[in-house]
Image 1 (cartoon, rainbow, N blue to C red):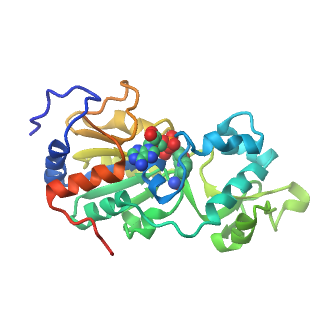
Image 2 (cartoon, rainbow, N blue to C red):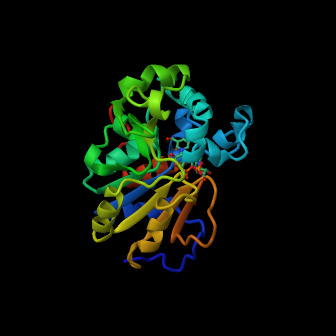
Image 3 (cartoon, helix red, strand yellow):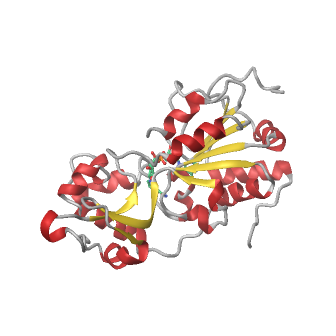
Length: 274
Ligand code: CNA
């Protein structure tokens, strides 16, 4: 039952209202983006100081170019420089938001976390791999852009750490293949497993939560349109999104502070693994 149905889309709501939804839901779908990792020290794309505002040093026409498959094929250097900055820091620890998602799993309420992030912090926070779908892939493996030869993260680690482009050990001499971490670039499709998993999850979901994402990249951005009407939709984000994306509830602010107040209201202990 939804006592807050008088709230209009994008109207700021209270942590208590939302707390009640977390208390009653049994199959929560959590969509996450770069915003849940900024407090771990990993810049997001679009915020001030984010990756897109630092692109000048790479001499690219548009921010998307660094992560576009066509640019990568002709000039993989900017991506490798970026990857160097990402991979060389090993001190990242999961945020309160990551712990909150793990807590939802421990409470038996997590249907699935669809993450757009590629930092691996979900795994580090202990969320079961069956409960996370990494929509944009991960650094766990890398493949050749031409012959698809695959290697593990260890096989490409030293190149990523030094920022030196790794050519394909199988086909570079004949075909110029370059090794690319298996993260999904613009111009590439997400894994087909996304569609099957989502289709089955859409039949079960009873609460839909987006945390720390500007929801600008498909297909993740389109999930909200496929939800059954009765499923309540919550946004937890620093900025409100376009009113055309209609959430029933919006909590605006720092996502870690917000999940902490929700936990306080619910009397849930967020100090997992501490
Ligand atoms: P985005 O477009 O940069 O949006 C991030 C959103 O989070 C923005 O709306 C911010 O206002 C919001 N935000 C930032 N910090 C906080 C905070 N502390 N509390 C609450 N909200 C906050 O990033 P999206 O994830 O929407 O875009 C999808 C891209 C970004 C995916 O392809 C990712 O792979 C890619 N990305 C991932 C990482 C990572 O793995 N950590 C880092 C940077 C970019």
